[in-house]
Image (cartoon, rainbow, N blue to C red; front, side, top):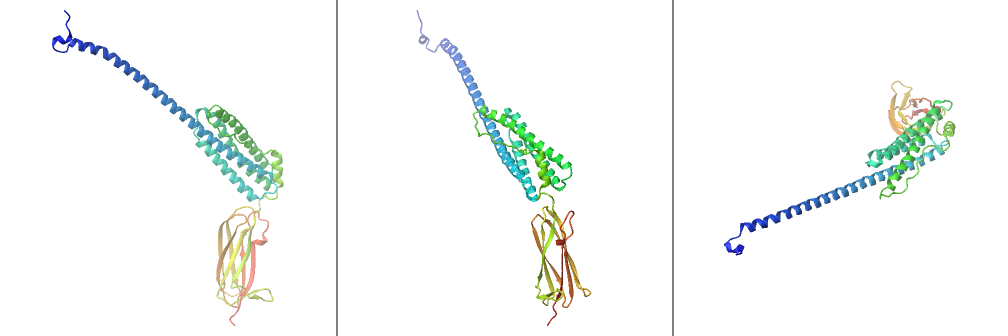
Length: 346
């Protein structure tokens, strides 16, 4: 006769055991599926994150390359404009302009070096680095060679330096062209878009010989040193002059001299020593003062005061002088002399 589970008066252990043996495999299969799904999610997240990171690195690198290229392009244009008027440009302007161009190129090289390079951008980076370094070396050689050619037009070594400089600029131009090809390929193969790269041509189009000839015949480029004393003022001011041309100062026991010195040349002058000497025809009168001017750039002037004790009815000779610099041609303006007397008390 069939017996139900309930006829025993308690739950059958056998029924409990059968129920347990069917639930465990389902739980295991559910756990395996969850683990697999989690693995897929992790892989997808890693891939997406990696893609976004690679895209960011590429976008940042291309942006840095565009910044460097734009600065290099404008520098090349400025160099071309400077060389086009080489025959008439002033030496100081030439030096100042080239110093600015070299500073810009140093900044360009800093941008290139600081950029985070994607794996596929190593070739472009190498060519960009070579271009920037070659341009900077070329600018250094061009400046020194052109100045030497202007100062020593009959010497051959400056021409050799200029030729080396032009070669370095040409190497930079070629390396940049190759870098642009690599960078354009990087952009084309990605979803990162930028404008076209500008042209950057530093090598002079007229050739080396024409550049050397212009430097040798340039009017404003050769070195010209000329420090000059432009004026000496008296306080109190002279009342007039004697028949012999001596200035007559009103009665005073102190004389203030105001001296102005200017750099009329085209080279920066340093440690300019100015001597002011006052000599009287009576013993114990007069004196001597010196002033050192740390630096004078072309066109810059400096004014200073010197005070001397003076006596009436003494004939004084004033001499203000500058040392003659090496290579200075115009020397007449390095000395100013003046004879004067102080009026006696009426």
